[in-house]
Image 1 (cartoon, rainbow, N blue to C red):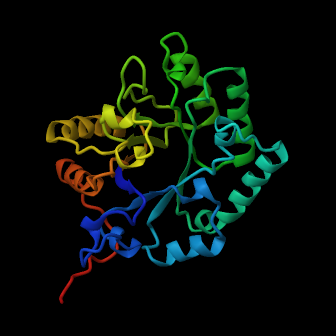
Image 2: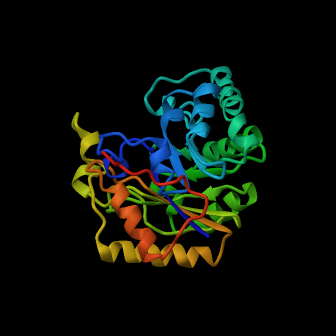
Length: 282
């Protein structure tokens, strides 16, 4: 099974019935069965907010939620370390917040996207085990931004360790050179889920350190050949795991939705149980 979605449901004018800049979740869920939400990274949402999301989507719609920034050690990366009590509190509040999704079987996975400072070392390995103890049986996916996790002499050990934890090793597609990025190489570490996150291949934008980096970092439109390559990878993974999820995050120029819809056609996928497509009659 291959499920395709986007990062956030709102910033996709192509999915808005009346051409507004922001699409509604009720509109988005007429096209895709899953969405990745990054808002919990910045602030853990209230349970009422999550319940509001649920009311706008079909019962079988699922959410991928980013872990909060304290859970992924971004505070340390910014030189603003919190206490371990505060970090543990963020886990407790997060788990309380997502209870409605867990109860309804709508939480596909929690995405731990680590900063580049989270490198492969003993301390990081121990922290992954701590995450496992705190998250329990919930699905956890990890995305590493430093290439130390991909070195040839440790690849096997990293795969075995994540398999032991039953964590999904996220495969990001991003600019990859000798000095930046990680390779687009799927590593299966869970029999239940493989996860492709597509950030685009805009090297100049990815390395932009100016104040407007957010407008350029994911500015990329995948070509037909590139989408065919991604489709082949997804099909190959689908032979190894129960589910493959493909999330497009190349949205600085609002290309994510059209690329995802095209991938659906390439793979000849039709999803059941989507929200009814609305029509703009006026």
